[in-house]
Length: 170
Ligand SMILES: Nc1ncnc2c1ncn2[C@@H]1O[C@H](COP(=O)(O)OP(=O)(O)O)[C@@H](O)[C@H]1O
Ligand SMILES: [Mg+2]
Image (cartoon, rainbow, N blue to C red; front, top):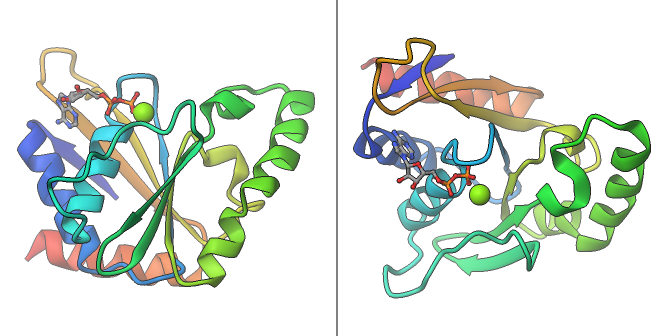
């Protein structure tokens, strides 16, 4: 599914729609270049999942994982420093091993929603079945904002995506 996000507000609306459909154990992977809006989307998603506005939601670039408590627990991670932007097999292999130490797959089993920026190369290591949201500037450089391309890599994520499509089209 492709959706245009001409404004920050439209991105927040998408995050709210998705938040209403997510359950503990779901994996949301955010892809796209630096500045594409991954952290912005993750923050909007956390807010929509009920993380109180007084609690800061920042980029876990250096800390790798931030835990938040909304209506479900949320683990917000950033795999950039592990090599999530790399296409080198050696780098990705080492990164996958490091990522395993973060315990994100286990957090899913414990009922957390896991949100991973730069996580596309690690979907299988994270337990698979991801809702993969690719954020980018729209194809027309004159168009404002961003566009999102959303894919599902498993049965549960396909169910979530189908419901999201229904909701956004209604
Ligand atoms: N439609 C939009 N959706 C999301 N972010 C947008 C949009 N338009 C502009 N932005 C801005 O783009 C920036 C994205 O930064 P950030 O979320 O940190 O990127 P990333 O985590 O992908 O590196 C934010 O400053 C945000 O305000
Ligand atoms: Mg970020």
